[in-house]
Image (cartoon, rainbow, N blue to C red; front, side, top):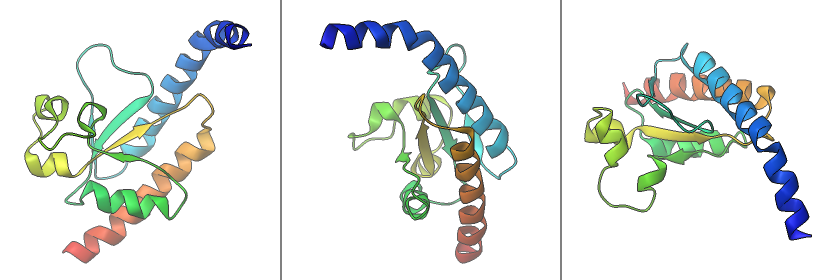
Amino acid sequence: AFAAAAKEGFAELGARIERMRMLREEAEKMLSALPVRINRPAGERAPHILNVTLPDIRSETMLHELSKSGICISSGSACSSHAQTPSAALTAFGLTREEIDSSIRISFSHLNTLEEVALLAASMGKAIERLVKIHH
C-alpha cells in the first residue's frame, strides 16, 4: 500500500509543484497591494514558500491575528524555526533584526485554493490596518 501511495504521489508531483507555485505567485500579486515587503531570493526558490516582512508589526502578533480567521502561518524562515539567532536566509536578504522579527512565512499545499489565498490577503490587509493604528 505504501509503495502504491508513493508511486501515485510521485506521478502527481510535477502538477502539485506547479499548483503551489501558482498559488504563491497569486499571493505575491495580492499581497503586493499591501504595505509589506515580499522577500524573494535570487534564482530558483521553493514553489510553496513565501516570506513577507510586515510594517512594524511583530510576526507573532500577525500569527495570532490570522489564526482568528483560521489561517495558519509561521514566523521567520523555515531554516531558523527553532534557532535563537536571526535567520541567515533573512539576513542575506538584507533585513535588519527588527525586520526579521516582523517577517512571516506562508507555506502552500497543493490542496490550498485561490479563495484561501484571497482570504489570506484580505485578512492580512485588515490586520495591518488595525495594528498599524494601534502602534501609531
